[in-house]
Image (cartoon, rainbow, N blue to C red; front, top):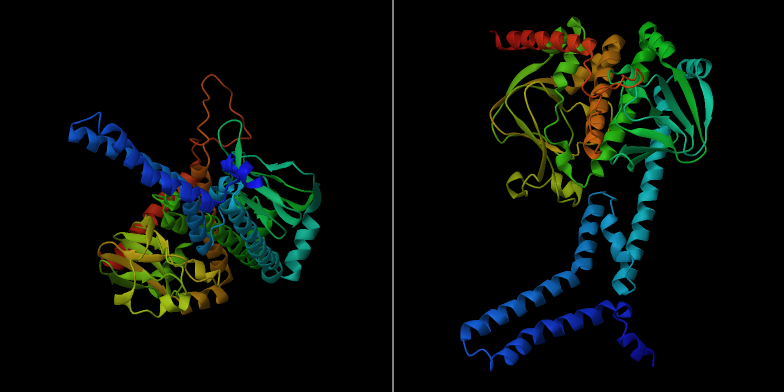
Length: 473
């Protein structure tokens, strides 16, 4: 009786039973239609058309039937690449057949793996400030800041508003969201203990593209902008250590965000030109040192400058030409890939962006021991300024002022890249301000920052000067 009941309720069938039924339809449908219409349609062409239509219908049915399996396969490939975006499996998991059961188990395992990795990452994040800052630095932060308890749902920073306070998350969890129109939002990240929020206020990007609010009862250390800015200007040692810590945190946040992107094309055509920010922040003496310590290097087309998952030998500044950045879709054993002969390697993978004149490559290893997650290759004959890793590391250790400015530059680059990704993930549109008063608390998307324009003009002049010295023109 139980089996007879299940026969009339296909939703309770096992996947094997459903697949068998579909295959039976695939085989019998064309035969049945041809057999039925052949006595009526004497024209052989009509019979062929009917058979073709029946076959197409059967193939469509088969395609729909195998969709859950394809979703499982797609999700497995994402997990192989450390991408835990599993929305494709949610619908499959609602099915009551054995495939739905398998999808639910798959989701549960994936969530457990994600939780373990997130816990490990958060532990590393917690240690950053404690490792990078001295006791005197921490004591100053304690004396200057004040602890604030944040209730769940409280908005700490509103999307588009100018940030005026730096927050260090001491306990709890904050949610980072981007707007999806006027009434909805999408959570793209969570920030736990040890994270810094509002760092953009002193690295040149005061308005952010996300909203940050508390997910649970949280405790933050609030540090006013005025006191922090004064401390960074007066204490060069503190500035070096603090900006390095922020650069490390932002590097980790950027890497985590990129690894979760379902569409790497969001990184395409970044409007940011790294070198303009570098030259706008560094001193003339810093630039002079880069020129004297660097080596002008010609890179022929199709030459790989930086290999994915291999050490980086130098910091590179692209003077002319075009480079492509790609990520491998084959996440097999890292050692196998690294020691495979070049002629036996697979293609470089999926291109995620292009680099043009004035951009920086290979900067992350100077603040993070993580190996590169992408390959950089010359699309055409290019010219780079190469500063060997050992020389730059020594400079950062011996010259605290240079280190402070260098880490500030790296933090700025990573912050800008993150904000650009967040803007592309969101669907917010420029505000229509016709016949409306301006809100002083909001930095509008098309508003000009004249101090930034001045720095960009100075950076352009410095870049031309650098090129003339390197090329002898």
